[in-house]
Image 1 (cartoon, rainbow, N blue to C red):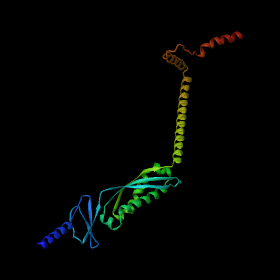
Image 2 (image 1 turned 90 degrees about the horizontal axis):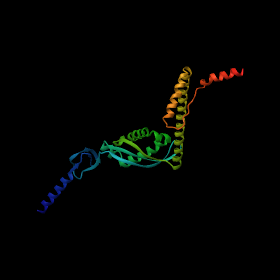
Image 3 (image 1 turned 120 degrees about the vertical axis):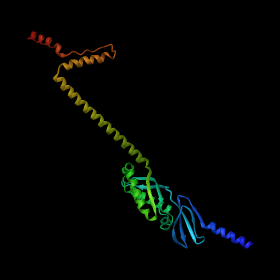
Image 4 (image 1 turned 30 degrees about the vertical axis):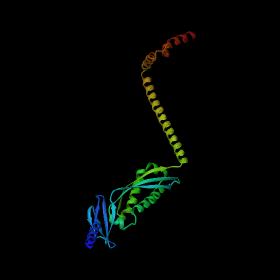
Length: 251
């Protein structure tokens, strides 16, 4: 009786050992006597107990933080840069067979590639052409991890830590640039105003009566201010007859 119970327990143990359940985002890499026999899942999978060994691999996208790296740019500026890497396993068998630890290997590759690519760029490119640098990083890392069955979908440079001296220098540069633009805009405004004044002077020279109309408009503007003193400009032509008469008497 005890022998039958032992046999039943052993059979149940074998059955439980032969059953594997994999979620929708998991796959099982099966090794039989040390040899790769394939990938199975998701759902219920039956294996040969004791003989088969199963390595579970996740297929979901992994967001890996790349630790801050000390980088010297092409123009000899020392910065500290960190990034984030998004990738997923597309071939579980290669991820297990071709590399010992694909997570560690991908992390190390991302760090070395980050230092290499940013070391070839100048500081202005690093700050202004972030999208191009991200694409270069993604292309290189994806090419290197392809034999491991890994697809790198995105690489983003998160933060660029500049030295305090460089931050102050960039602030002075930005301030000087704003002053330069302000002076240019002011000069352009003065130039356009002078052009309009020259055009107005040309019109007044052709039509002398326009000056009288301008005088009347000026009086209207002064009166609207409720001033107690009104300055009335008189044209010089009104005094011309008196000046001519005085000149005849002198002669």
